[in-house]
Image (cartoon, rainbow, N blue to C red; front, side, top):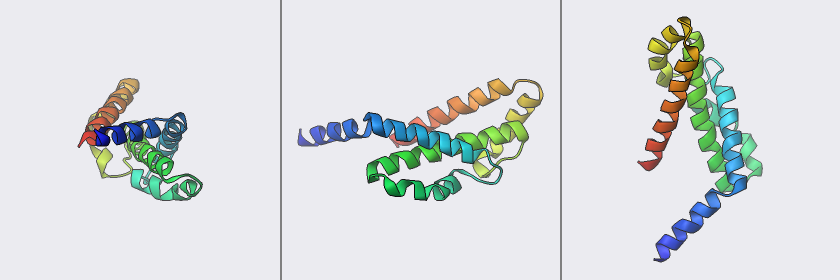
Amino acid sequence: MDALASLMEGFSHALSLQNLLWVVVGCLLGTAVGVLPGLGSSMAVALLLPVAFALDPTAALIMFSGIYFGGLFGDSTMAILLNTPGQASAIASTFEGHAMARAGRAPQALATAAIGAFIGGMVALHR
């Protein structure tokens, strides 16, 4: 029972308003770096490492997870719109996503990439 109480305390700390704000900031920064050609999500984490020096460790790890997943989505955005993947994980997005964008269906391709990134992130968190 003590382990369950500790788990609930950890969730309440991780899901505080301040930490949720840091994950949103991380997602925005990761997406902004991810759309740059040649810069992937791991490079976004490396470039934005100095930002986390002023944060407590929990907020920094939460922000880095937001940067990483935002960078993955930003990389697929570049692959869909310009057919230029930033790293190997976005190559599959160039096959059908860029063809959809050329046919005038870019919003559907980007929505599919966003939904896929969300579902993939949720599945990855449970493993």
